Length: 309
Ligand SMILES: NC(=O)c1ccc[n+]([C@@H]2O[C@H](COP(=O)([O-])OP(=O)(O)OC[C@H]3O[C@@H](n4cnc5c(N)ncnc54)[C@H](O)[C@@H]3O)[C@@H](O)[C@H]2O)c1
Image (cartoon, rainbow, N blue to C red; front, side):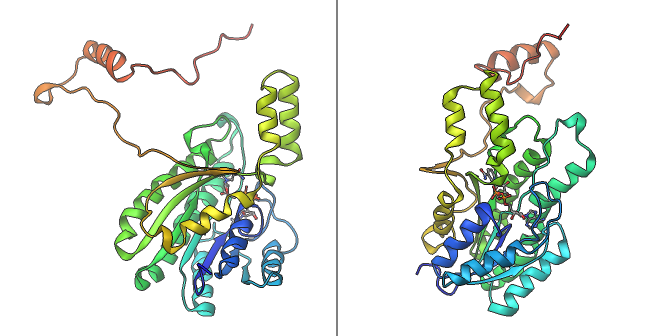
């Protein structure tokens, strides 16, 4: 098996994409720790230990798994999770930062608690886990870090907290690739699309039905959403990314969904206008040059609507 002898922490590993990844890594021989306190999709507490149930499920299938009932929003608990993995298995090879919560609202309705909660799980949680895990990986001069991104980093309505946190993750990935690559550690982003309770629960389906009925989306778009593939389509790619076969892949961002794997382009300066001797641009020059040169072909993603009477 391709991951024999390796160990992995998968945050948010109790369900959805994280659980599918944990199953796939375990099936390749990795020992997996599922770090997940459970909770509703907005992070509200829930009874029981879904992480223990998920770990038992993997053990029943012949894998080796342990549950860590802790939140990535707790910096010290992240340190304890890494220590638990090292104590039990003596090494930490793979970290998948997958934990996620959603609290969508328009920015003017978004309380600071919802901003903080989402950033604390997706972005600060990834920092905390990498901070603690990278020391062991550096000492071992080897490691694999995968951060679960989202298309929302490109900007979606009602998801300022989530999109900003995911955008931060893209930058964190790129920084980690450059900081840690010299120690044999790779860090990449995977942007999944899969039917989970986060993306396709009954409330989401009902919302899409209403939008279809109101003519706000096409039948084709409706069917595309309703037939979205499950999280098992994301897991094989992650298993490949953390294997020896992908040792050369570092700092990249991938898009993965049922039947498709894509890669995002590198963020780079697209065009520039310059001024001799670094002289100041005048207002008139900027009006001409920016509109005529830099913004050629540009379309405003959200032009103002006419005010309702
Ligand atoms: N499903 C998709 O199509 C999709 C699309 C884009 C991005 N993502 C990302 O993929 C990841 C997994 O999403 P999913 O769809 O499987 O969602 P999910 O709700 O099914 O699973 C998320 C898991 O994270 C756990 N979690 C929540 N807060 C946590 C915390 N503080 N510490 C540890 N674990 C915590 C939850 O208990 C849950 O088990 C998320 O980061 C999400 O943003 C998913």
